[in-house]
Length: 294
Image (cartoon, rainbow, N blue to C red):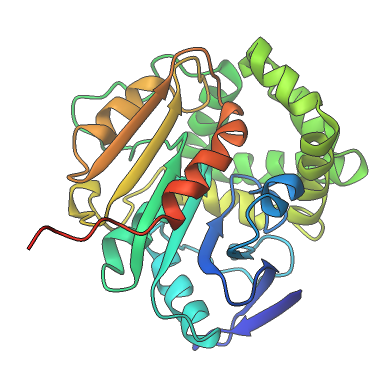
């Protein structure tokens, strides 16, 4: 069911719910670029009938109004208002790729609401001390992020042109990042279910503009508005060791600083291996934590 929520500041946030309305609520935070359609494939949702999947388009993507200058931390405010509108008490959050820092923001800033969080193939914050942020990163990502930092107007123009091309042919995005895809990634993104999800995701995400993509990049490259060390909820960190979009050093940096992190490193996986990890990740997110011994 596609609907939306009016934020207190007047913005419209497009929301889609799937699964069991009475199931365990899991809020999904999509990648960059992306939208509500691109987090969990249909077959994975169907295999988890006890889950209430709640996905939304971050500001500027799909049907959601833009929020210029937003920070990663602003996702926690939007998710809290969304949860209030849907009558949610406590819930889990799951973010993949560019959505993973936004999931961590929810875990850090909404500790009374977030039960558990999963952050899959997450980048580290740009000010991560001791981390060479670009080491091991695909050339396409290095060029994109460097341009965003050094020439934001030129970066905006380039993203607008890329978004127009992707609207005509969503497969163009996968072509443009081919230098960072491992053999395993290519196998995953070529499977019919995943390919269909990704193409629908990119087309819907960029159907009106590239503003969401631009604002995501700027937010990920700026002060996030919270410290990963402030995340007190249990967090499953999943990463592929061969990932060149969020290199493994980012995972190691986060795992060393999030107090209750459960790090999982898959040695033969790349960036899109996170999609194959989703069934186990959802099982962990929805499991009841053990009661402490009396």
